[in-house]
Image 1: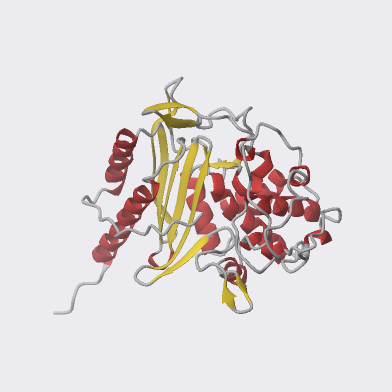
Image 2: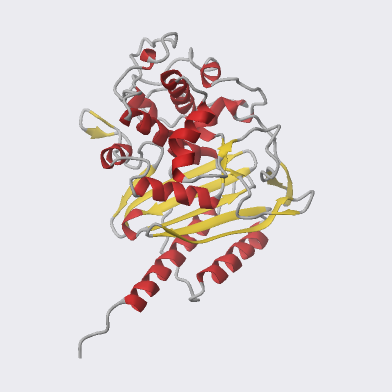
Length: 364
C-alpha cells in the first residue's frame, strides 16, 4: 500500500558517495536492529553505488553481500506487471480481454467480468488474503492451482468501478501468463523481464527449501531479533514471491526507462491512474507501481514490500533521474522510507556535484 512519505531530500556531506553510503547502512544496521541490508543508488541510468551490511544469516554469521538475494515482497508486482505488458506488446495478452479468454474455467462473477487491465490496476474486486493465508505453508504447482483458493469468493465490487489492493489479483495474472504463453511462470519472468534486464540474481522464493545464499527471515520480538516464519510464497509468486538484489532492481528500473523492456506507449499505460466514468479511483495507483505527481519533485514511483522476514522499498524520482532501493531481512521495518529517501538525497547531490564539475567555465 502506498504511504505518503516523501521527506525533504537529504544531502551528502562527502564527495565520496560509496564511503558515505556504506557508513550509512552500517549505522542503520546498528540503530534499527536490522540483521542485513542490501541497498543501491541509480543516477541517470548508471548504478553509482550498491552495498550490503550485516549478516544474511545470524545463526551462521554469514555476511550479507551485494549478491545476496532478499525477499522483495510486493516489489514483485512491478516485475509481473512489466511481463504482462511485454506479453501485450507481443499480442499474447489483450489487456481489455476478460479473464475467461485465457482461463475458461475461471468462475464468472455475477458482479461482472474481470478484465486483465482490472487485475493490473487493483480494480478487479478480488479481495486480498485473509487470516493466516499470507503465512501459508502449502505449495501450489502452478498459478492456476493457486487461484482455486480464492476464485469462488465474492468480489468486493463490480470490476472496474473501485480500487482495492489485492495480491491475489496478481496471482490470476500469473495464471493468465502461463495459459497465454504455455510456459511456467518462472520461465516466463526470466524470458520477459529478468534476462533482458540483466537481473542475474533474481528468481522465485523457493522456501522452505530456499536457494543456498538467500537471506534468512527474521523479525524483532520483545527487543530481540528472532527467526520469522519460513512460509511458502507459491500462492502469490506474481504479487509477492520473488527474491532479488539491490543491483538487479536498479537494472530493472533502468531497463524500463531506457526502453529495453517496455515501449513508450506501454510505460505510459503502466503509469496511468485507474479511473471509472472519468473519475480517478486512486490518485497514487498504477500498474504494479504507486505513482505520485509531486509538486516539487515531479513524478515519483514507489513500491513498498512487506513479508514474513522481509521489508523492501524501491523508489524512483523520475524527473530527477535518481532511484534508490533498500532490501532487508527483517519484518515490519518502520524507518524504511527514511532510509531510502536518505539514499535518494545522496544520489541527487552526487548528480549536482558531477554537473558542477563538468559545467563549462563562465565567459570572462
